[in-house]
Image (cartoon, rainbow, N blue to C red; front, side):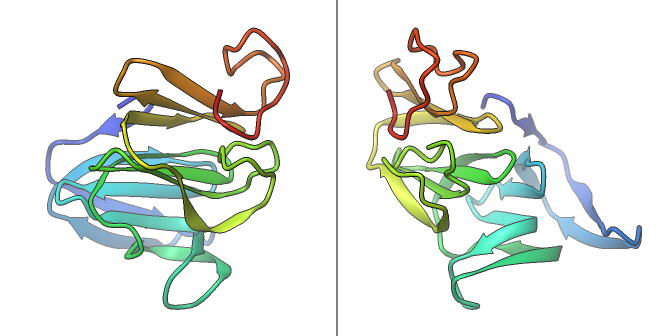
Length: 171
């Protein structure tokens, strides 16, 4: 997966608080780790997604943004194949090729056609996606047919569409 660290050995995960105290969280085998500016996402080889840091919850605690010091399982999405997270948004690719996005959308980086902040994961592709990647304020997906789609901030031409116009939907 693009921009992701693949870990294939058993390891110990340390979450470090701002007070520099250390919490140990053991994972039998990690599959993929994605590091955002304010959060970390860990995908275990059993397709379960775990997170820590500044996250938005869309399950048991309701519609609130939380700062989590310890790692927790994201129960709202199952069958996860890949993910990426950057400044204030994350994108999740499920095994069926569907894609879900959550977080800041100021620059249209979620690709849902709006600039609305999404506290819950919203489906942005129903299938056919092979890989996902995020920049700080844009997102890119690789489709099964080999096409690449991008959305979000485009001030430096990062979407590759021949312009510097930001997009709220994938182009």
